[in-house]
Image (cartoon, rainbow, N blue to C red):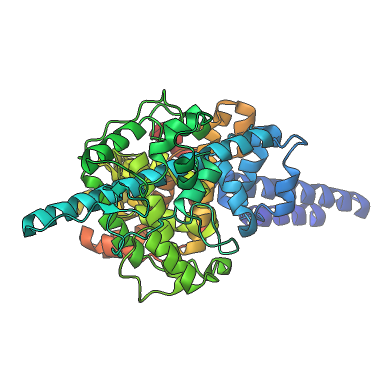
Length: 561
């Protein structure tokens, strides 16, 4: 405004001065001066704004999410993503994903499918992953039966009674790996739970049926008929002892069960720290599993904690995915019995079903990644995935992909947590040193007050839908790095802000920076800051938070990472 006033005075002097000539000349001069003044004002305004504009994300508004039509248009005729998935990742990072297609997009973001895979390749990976999940579930059932049998035998010996763990089948065979038929903890025909069943499908198949359909293993009846047949294949012979835990026939139940568990170690999928995609390493016998620091009996502890957490899981996902609430009570109870779920009588059918799925997948993951096993908080990360993904095997592998980054949050030595808290502290320090000095005065510079945000990845500070939006953008960043897109300057420029594996930490730092004035002026202890962070639930604008997080990435990633 000051510049415009100066221009007006100059123009008035030129037009009304004593040296002024004809009116036409005065008009031309006035027009010229006015135009020059306008350009000067624009330059001043742009210059002043540019000084405060740290990245293009500061003015970014959420664009429309990826729609089903746009999703289909991203593929070539042979089922490959165009541009190696760059367009997909850019779209997800700017607007998220339409709820109706999340189940289709998430496997790409979480590394279950490669971004450059064809439809044929994905079908092969899906079949392989399904088989791997069924093997994990079968292993869980076998370990559960062995644990319960050992417990019962120990109890019987203490009480001075004959053990009844070995019962005679209808065909006169003894099975020492199962609990008595009258036991309510393990159903007579345990299923591979709801591994691939949804509420629209038939009731869950028995273990024998599932394994025949999906792992090419024969039914028990077929094995008994063909036991002496010379036409039985080598595969049938090798897998005869591994079909289900209800058909084991032996004299020494404990030793046989132990040998089965040991023999199966080489065939079931295991977490590998060699990196790469699921289809490359998960079912490969050459991929060496990470050594577990936990004792074998810890699986029983994991089972107990998993069931407690599953029953306590909330139902906030119900309003977002009503299709999963139509399960009948009979079917829900069938699922619950299949995974030996207890104390669920007070729950609605949809919550029983949801809790049973949590148990099945978390148990399988405890076998898959024995170094981590199960820790409280992992159910918070899995629950949103189950709400979107109706197939248990697909939900498991997406969860395994999610945990490749998140598993460090659950290490017993907390090395991963400390690294992340330190990174949040450095972001705050480099962005707002005044706030950081105040945190030092409160002895809170370690940023322990955001511990919960780091562990469960904002799950309890955001609404259900906000959590999905944040995670999708975070997964898109990680997928870009995993595919090497960030290594290409052109592709990186197309993505806008550089992708980072630690977008969550920038978002956490951004949420603290948004409260800087309140923290500096009103809080005098770390406990007060913790209470403030815990009270953020439902108060955060997720897209404003992502704007600020990307702004921090643009300005600080070269110093932080």
